[in-house]
Length: 544
Ligand code: G16
Image (cartoon, rainbow, N blue to C red; front, side):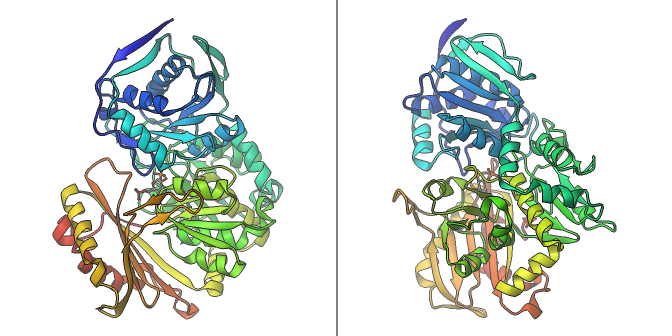
């Protein structure tokens, strides 16, 4: 085996976005593109010699190739041991769990999350630190700076490791452990939830569930947990085989892309409970029989019912939500007398709050929910949390959510995405909005009066770091709100996200259709931001 130092030239576009570096597969296949970024990660790590690293991905195209490269580079960069998921598979929350459990220096997770896969699809590399969470901004900035100056990388010349069976191997002096991808994570889930109660529910003959893994990473996890340990009938997990191109689908658990599940859950003989997760297993969508639970409502319901679940029965230290997420959970936190934190979009912003014990549950409108059990959002955890609540309350999903609205009022909420618009126009739209902000407070816009208008800035309450320009918020005196921001996870052009929210305390009005309830805000958002002018689009591409 031969240690090689290869000369390279920097790429200027390796800036990590909301969640790691995401690019198309052909971008990652450019000579040295992956190697440069991995070396930039290794170069930014202090004190890595002899330490343990966790490695795995969501099984998408290029996962296996990248894993072999990273293993050889880790060996050449003096890493002591790499724990790699069997078949190269590790869901993002499972990777977080294993990093924490093994006292690793961190982990490299290969995923472009919900973005499509395949030879022309997307790929991604994410670095998580020793707490198991996505690298905070100061780390991603250091990686980016290094990527702009890199002129060589180190790699061991060696044969590929067999990833398809659990076992121990050596690459030079570095140990490689190919580990069962599900075991540690399954054990953690059993420690949090009442598996006996959930098993009784799933085997009662009176309750049916459908879990759609969208041919992505959660298939093996869901089969072991739901069909194995919890006794749900075979076939409960659909699309459970991870495929390199996700079967040609878009592994994004929402009403648009999880269409197989939506058809079943809104069909004639719909099961009682439906759920889907995304490419790397950190997102979730929850459905009842012909009933959709918004991610913002889901966070609020989990918070209000946490005491029913063994892992959370002693109460919550606090909760946190990203700024564009609806304020439904704020009302529950208020009622429980616990703190509620509002962070920028990106799970990495929850890390400090979780580490400091300030928050127990966290959630985002982008179909992400999680807790202090790991430092990532966790799709199957959310499904188990719901099942545990259903097993205890013995009510339907719809009844539980309607009950919740009755108690706390309903936050009508929707996100409108304009995908793949020209970046120049999208940036102009944001600049033009920013320029208007100072004049907006106090102005009447249609039936609404502007209470505040700003570009969200966050000061981390733990380390004092400041993150600016995190989304434009326009709030109205009646509690309604619109938020505009550009996505940090897309790979083509820009994606404009418009988040709309209004609050309705009167339960006689809770049946209204969401888009109807928000229609005047939707029109106003279009006018204020001049969406048509700047993007050339008449309507959003995805509404969730
Ligand atoms: C990532 C982040 C989330 C964020 C989401 C959408 O999720 O971890 O915190 O809410 O992207 O971000 P954006 O609006 O910038 O596209 P994932 O599941 O893609 O890793």
